[in-house]
Image 1 (cartoon, rainbow, N blue to C red):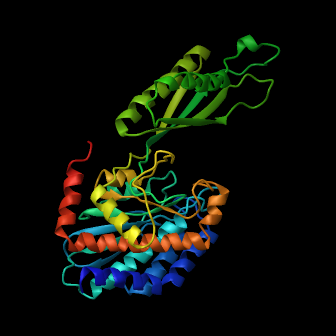
Image 2 (image 1 turned 60 degrees about the horizontal axis):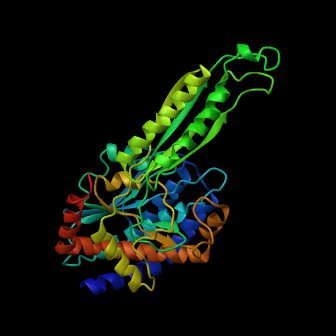
Length: 396
């Protein structure tokens, strides 16, 4: 079987399983589960893989109850195709993870099929890795630490969006929680005898805003008040806030994080209250492997789409795929499931698009392009060498 024949075979396999893949995507969409609670989604993914390939599925995997892995192929270079399937509070699958999951399954099933047919130019194999808790839980980071990507030379996934992009950046981030402890007092009878934790919270916001002029392009700092006191006539003894700090790379993230923490400390000092800082590990910036991204893009064009490499008008978020990209050559292309500007991730309208016919069509195109890119990587030493060279030349 020659490379072009392999690509045609991949398309035929995915088209033949389109109904099953669509059913999987819509079932996950209809039953949203939050991070680390994706038990039904993980089981449905495992059932679909077993029914379409007869391959075993490891579940749980990597020490995570809702993670999973299926493997195909032989010894040699390996590619990991990643699935996400956690939902968001209140807005469900408004990030389209149901489509990410079904697309990853479709790509893996197609690769398994062509490897089973023993195409002579293909060596190695592929892993389908189910990665829970992308929405703030860092499931991929936990799997990295558990050794789930050992022996993997390339990793890939796609993400739904309002436009097709091959190598759009994401931001490194960290979450900071600030608890302020003051002294309660009657706000009318003896306000002078209190120490307002709420004043420290509001001053933290003001001080951070005053520092935005010193942030580099791409930095995002946004927060909310998690506790603001108990009653209007009580000087707030305790108040809290949380901030997400994002930057284009981990070095700038550390600089901005230090600024944000200094603002909270200054606010605490001004109000004569005590501060406790709790940091929750975030994600690293995404390092796109351009030889792999361009290969994926060529296949998307062949499938009738016209992706850009990136788009400066598109915003950037954060993902734990960034951490994977610091450990192995990776791509995270974006695939349109709606018109540009119509809606975007984490909006109610985007959740509807993730269950639409257009959403399923985008998912099937992404599955084909990922599977084609995988077999190209397994069968073309020049592509593997280019991907390795780009990986070794990445910013450190």
